Amino acid sequence: MKKIAIIERLENNGKQEPFNIVYYLDSSYRKIFDELNVLLIPVVSEKHIEEICNICDGLILTGSANDVYPKYYNEEPIKDKKYDKFDEYPLVEKCVKEFYKYNKPILGICAGVQELNVIFGGTLFQNIPNHNLKDNSKHNLKIEKESFLYKIYQKEKIEVNSYHKQAIKDVAPGFKVIARCEDGTIEGIEKENIVGVQWHPEYVLDMKLFSEFIQKSK
Image (cartoon, rainbow, N blue to C red; front, top):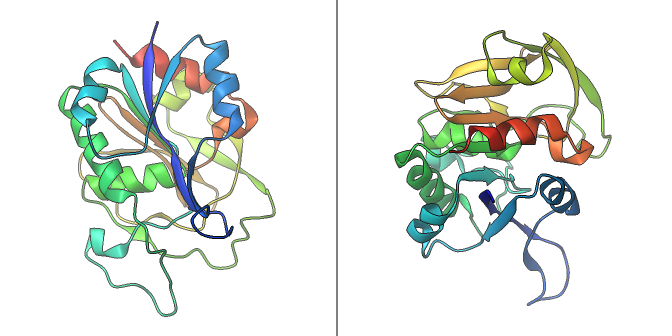
């Protein structure tokens, strides 16, 4: 049985302290990996990452409602930009570097692809003007041939959901862009055994994508 480490989302749910800061996974992940017969290992702590990597076949970054602090890519916050007091980036970075060291597949979703890009030396657009996270809008992507995504969908255009308010600006060294939105926004990158997508494939139970990712694990 495959074992996949999955970093839970960290969020302030607005409830009264001390019940407001929570780690969680969306129920769609359980549906997907139950069907794929994969054991998920939730990750919420920076401790014992080496042991988790040792027993797991791959890593998933589920993203976050919290933006990546610009200090991690050597920029100052834009005017009036506020950040939560808690910061999960150090946990994500430690996990990614450990799994990458052993060439185990890594999948970054939404903020996860942004975290991957920053970890390997890229930068982000701190804000996308006029973008509404609540409208559940969809848009078309152009997929590059000879890519992880093209192998899955076997076509150059697909429709995806849109929930992000930041995006990749400068692509990290060594990564190639494998998908773009019609307005040029980068929506997919890959490098060796790493792939990141800007949308949320778990929300639509995209079994093709997750099944192919599992096949990448040794």
